[in-house]
Image (tube, rainbow, N blue to C red; front, side, top):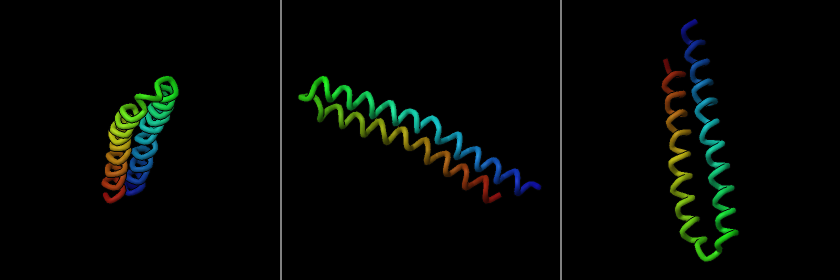
Length: 74
């Protein structure tokens, strides 16, 4: 029974841990493309800031994945 609860917790951890970053990445890219369309001369700076933001957002997903692995190992 305890192993099944750990697997359920792992599934919930990765599932819920991916929702926020997924929405955040979508909004970030949408606004970055909008900003590049409005100011093409600033596209390089916007793209750099976008990639930094993407890295931070994806780090949250990776933390959720690590927690899911830890929960499934127990």
